[in-house]
Length: 278
Image (tube, rainbow, N blue to C red; front, top):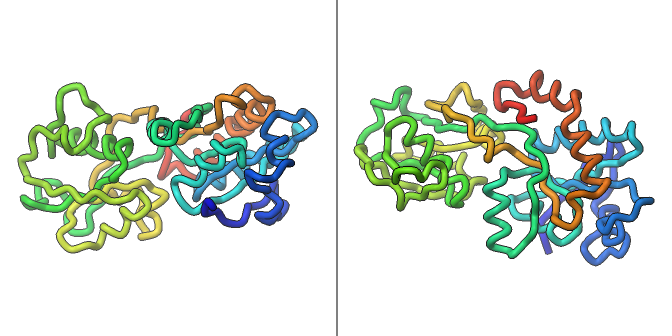
């Protein structure tokens, strides 16, 4: 059974998890199949600010007669599992490279529908204020999944801390590190646990997203260095399935998620951590 928690309100109305149904729920199955009388759009997401955006989009969609129901999950697999199985119509929690990795591993057919924002990502250091002070042999905490690891290594290459195989860009792994003048030691960690490495002895640098580093009271302005060149492939996306990507539900969701109210919210409330991508 997938791990997921109580669904958050539909445009402010509290609903329990039981109301969401499961993959065995015939009602849910008929909704996902495109029943025109069904005006409920189920969206799986994980944490803020993604969940905040979905809740705001729910208010926008209400004016057009749609109810967007947010189901908040606890990890970085459940939201894809829910969409893939038909338990949710869409998700809002990931970038396209991570979705592509899931598709390959699970033989799934998820589709990136609409980029919403680019998170400001980079490296944080508890012990050092400048790159030149980082000693040889220091540990560097990077994601253990290929899509996020490649992005982290590309940022280190931007700072001339390492050199990567020519042309690999953000698609590299530690095997593509061709020069490592500071003899950095790689600590490969699950994305959700990277923040815990921040205070570990000997860890000089920790890659992270604003969402996860925030639990330590940190924000992008506290990073030792951030990504210089934004790669739109890593924008947080609305994701659906091949069989429903052109449905009225997904069209309505896309319209609400790219509304002026959502853009204003991103620009006014989260400008320190992200940049709108629509």
